[in-house]
Amino acid sequence: MILFISPHLDDVALSCGGLVYRLASAGQSVTIATICTADPPADWPLSEAAQHEHRQWQLGDRPYQGRRAEDAQACRVLGANAAHLGLLDAIYRRDEKGAPLYTNDFIGGAVHPYDWQVQLPQVQAVLAPLIRTATQVYCPLAVGGHVDHVIVRHAVELLAGQPDIRYYEDFPYADKLDRFTPPDGWTCDEIALTTDEVNMRIRAIACYASQLSAVFGSAAAMPERVRGYVSRVGGERYWACRTDL
Image 1 (cartoon, helix red, strand yellow):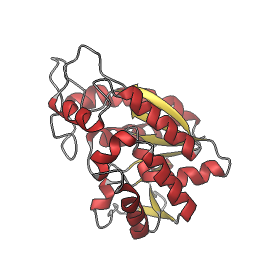
Image 2 (cartoon, rainbow, N blue to C red; image 1 turned 135 degrees about the horizontal axis):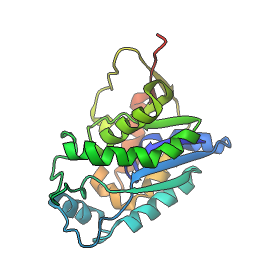
Image 3 (cartoon, rainbow, N blue to C red; image 1 turned 90 degrees about the vertical axis):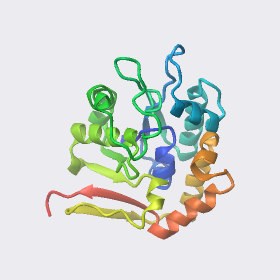
């Protein structure tokens, strides 16, 4: 089983849809495992960050049933299995006193110490059985610095070890960079995509209707943005830490 790890319900389709479709079409067993897939308890007040995201998503106060359905549809488009691991998004998480961990600083801000203590081991626990059975693991580079991406990357590295991981460039965050500059000793596989593979990546992204306005400004703007990035970087890029160099 080839395992693609997604912090949120859309990250792998956004970043890796072409490769996922290629592998699945070739008969490989591909699983997209998403970490943050749960609604918070009904009696939790929503933080300002959560209220803002809910207004953008337009799926009501309990949006994750709709978001999981979007992801299931996208995985069917790509030919992958969907695994929803049931942890909370950063916009919902609270400390031991019930205070929100993040307001508007969950993208590009520091991971809250409470998250390192609580969220990180929870992410490790839900991922460990999948990583043990995977023949290859893909995880986010955490380009853009979203705290959920940073925690997921750290958890995967603790479980799998850097040399056994392939890292994907988090789109659309990576689109804001001229080019990702890796540390010394890292190598890049550039996967040139066929027209069909690009189109299937776009079809999969389109399944996440609740996210398109927030991510791209509008649904209509999405295909051109994806094609532009794919053209600029030569397809999809996957990074590895080489210890034998």
